[in-house]
Amino acid sequence: MKILSSTPKQDGFYMPAEFDLHDGCFMIWPERADSWQFGAIRARQVFVEVASTIGKTEKLIMCASHKQYHNAREMLPDYVRVVEMSSDDAWARDVGPTFVRNKEGIVRGIDWYFNAWGGLEDGLYFPWDKDNQMAKKMCDLLDKDIYDAQDFVLEGGSIHVDGEGTAIVTEACLLSKGRNPALTKEEITKKLKDYLNVEKVIWLKSGIYNDETNEHVDNICAYIRPGEVVLAWCEDKNDPQYAMSKSCLDILDKETDAKGRQLIVHKMPMPSPIFITQEECDGLDHMNFEPTRSPGERLAGSYVNFYIANKQIIMPGFNDPMDQEAKALLQRLFPDRQVIQIYARDILIGGGNIHCITQQIPKGGL
Ligand code: KQY
Image 1 (cartoon, rainbow, N blue to C red):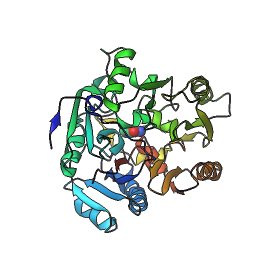
Image 2: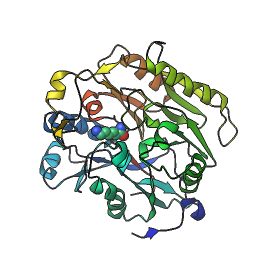
Image 3: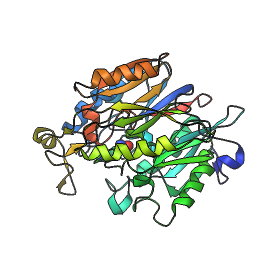
Image 4: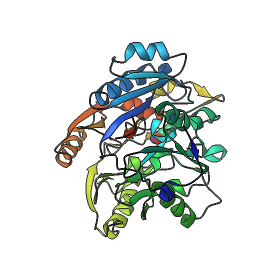
């Protein structure tokens, strides 16, 4: 594996869209008891469901710690590959490499700096050094060269691309104080253009209310094909989410993409507000002598946090009356893929959802 100091753009590499064909997908086995209730026992069951489903149509590689290797191996079906790799938590989207590919089908990774969603400013845990090494280790495992972007803080959940020259991000996240405070919006746009090899970056203002990642785009808006997105949409004008989703809609309605197309926006309903219970909080370990969540805290639940696998869409469900409508919408939008809904409250309690715990390896990556 070579570490490259050039940029993907200079070398003719770009980030393919998630709906493009995959060779595989990385996930990381959950373990830390201050993120996942009851020592991550419930989360592991959901991770097994997600991994077993994705693994049916693309090679699923589960990274697990030395301590949990045998447990992961035993709980996962034999078609899922388990490798030992040390991490600080289980967010493959954010700590894994962003894969890029060239015209010949050669795949490489990008190694952004990971600082636990905001470093010492408003990050969610310390230390994060093992997480920050994950992208390199994953590329090494696959024998893929990697672009060194360690001077720039970014997580995979904070970008979405159409694979045809456009990226979508949120200002709340990318301009947050804990990431790249020395860079202007223009400088960040230039970094994204150089590394993702896009011509246009669409900047939404915000994401999902109370999203502790500083509002990653992957919880509010996702490409379903070039020129078309789904946007988490709140009907209740009294909910703080209403103004946040409305500001995104106003921007998306006005914007064109890199190819000059007007974007088609599909409104994705939201589950009713979801709050963490006392019992769930009691199941979480403290971090630095403090609880990580408090009872009644609103969780950033959204159906937009789905994973596009080969021939399948893996989406969260919350036992909410909207679950069926959201699933039906995605099934209409992806007629050639089977939509599978997995009850994901236990991932949500950790602070994200199915998209956040997965990282696709595009065709050519294995
Ligand atoms: O990408 C994500 N949504 C990860 C959130 C991490 C939260 C840590 N508790």
